[in-house]
Length: 358
Image 1: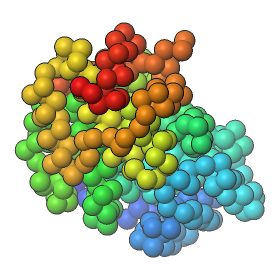
Image 2: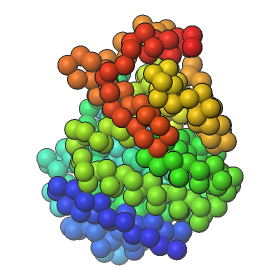
Image 3: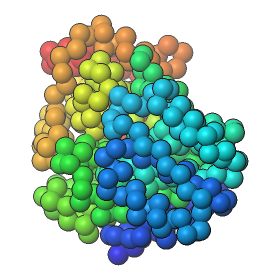
């Protein structure tokens, strides 16, 4: 099984290749322009996939690798410097290609290193988690965290290609699979109620790693994202919809400490909070909120945030990248499958959701 999608962007078009199992080196080699390749991975993925990829590329390229610790808490300036150090130590030129072999953290950091090294070099995404396959590897958002806010330092920088191999999901811990499912469910809630029904019917197959079901979900999500990125590459409008649940979720991640809650776990609880606010505004009903909770729970995801003081949460929201003219803008549901970006909401209703008094 192999599927190809195309992402259209201002800089260049690039493919998303979805396979059930493949030789990674063979798939990415046509998209490597120069002779130098730097593979960036983490200590977990290194043991599983680094050696065969490097060995396969060595026949035609000069290949180096950087192995970073595994976890959101390492998505920092200190650790991205290790990528720059390796690029400098190996005298990499402007025609080097960086390869991100790992989940969302590795993809974001490698992409930002590529965007900033010599003011921009090529990179390729090989996402090995469900979350990165359906979301973070597509669309060119790259960056690192700051102690005061998630993803606050970064750049838009599109990859040359994305290779999503379903086989890599067979080695994914169940908690990481669930975290990725949060982003899959997000697409259904903001864009396609029919996909929500499909997820409800196929969740058990997805959670037991049925490759054909996973490939179908990944392909659908990548197509949704590709369509939005083509319309709004720099997130000046519609692309912000993809942040449904994220404003609330980033509060959880920042408050609890990066890595304590996985990104997808925080987004899941954040989507429930956004759904509750949507209900309080009269847009969706309690039955629909419960339907959202049920599909999240069927993916073994949390539906309640940790206890965070309301004023603290509101303060953290002010660091959100969607804030405009000092106003927090939220993505809320007009109905299941239809989301809007709005600053026009009653702040007492938001505070009620944050304090969980509703």
